[in-house]
Length: 433
Ligand code: UGA
Image 1 (tube, rainbow, N blue to C red):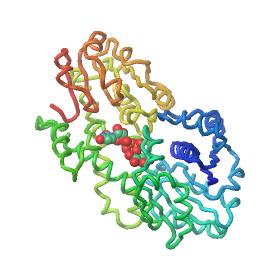
Image 2: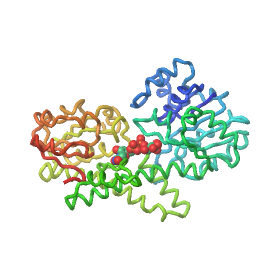
Image 3: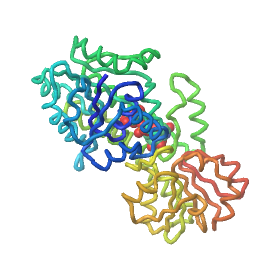
């Protein structure tokens, strides 16, 4: 099929490359010339395992190209809209200006039989509004939310858990076109849910709200564990054995960040308020608060291991990305904690395997070093804030040989307390005795 992808950020770049990998002819469009240049050269503008290889291979087949010229989407019959919907600066609501601009720029090139497919995360009601705008061109609209996780984006796109098609009732042609696009996944048995626009839009935010709630639930248990001497990691294991609960997404620690969960739960609350059902989502305010309280608790623990104040103390920060296998620092709990400690007068030395460049762009005032050993050199405390594999595997004796004080705070409950204590470290963690 001939496909266009409007917006080549995280979602769009991965989607374009994966669609070409599946054999479709794809043109990716973005307004940022630097991004288009990078992608055209087969370079991913962000760290995502497997993406550079996929880009290079797909470009070599001639099936994938990138451009800033929207006119080049003419000839494609399916147009994916994959632009960002960040949180507005002055409210919880989502900023739809990029979605609106993408649709407005597509209108002149659309013709009868074309299908526009929204992938961006939008407030419920958006698709119905956009469908009206498109109607005059003879093209149709479907809403097909994306559930990819950073770090697993390629796998999640090629082999998704499920496909959701939000369509106008009875639009069989839209279903047929999407089935052609996703023929490989469907043949592999991926379940698909065919529904209306509103349900499709809600599925996306409901899924992220559920995941955020699961994380904040276990972090709330961590708060209780902290005052009772209980161990939240064992608690998570024990309740996780119940299939109805499940162990995944029950890792207590510094909480969630990134470009999706925080802004999506806030956008969902804002939309619920507009719809007069804010009470239904009141619990998400708590989910957000619990999440943000973990960052404060982390700063408190740093204070405690430093003897009451971090002022003038040398603190090593291991991890800056919002999660491992990513260089994304949008609303990153780790970067936030590093910055707060510096503001409290600590001498922070931070490191991350991939996210130093992205961190420096938003916090040029922090000191960055390439390795954990350099960050820990002479440190009064070490804070592990993103559970990269190389940090989980750190040798307590080796790290102990460079620090000034053997004190570590495990912000992700990813170290073996026994091993660190046996090597003479003071080990503290969120939700663990
Ligand atoms: C999330 C969803 O998982 C995807 O399904 C969704 O498609 C995506 O948002 C999106 O809306 O685009 P992502 O932001 O890549 O994906 O990251 P997650 O793997 O969900 O992790 C989010 C945050 O939760 C991270 O900061 C992570 O450290 C934290 N987390 C995760 C925990 O604190 N505990 C856990 O048990 C799991």
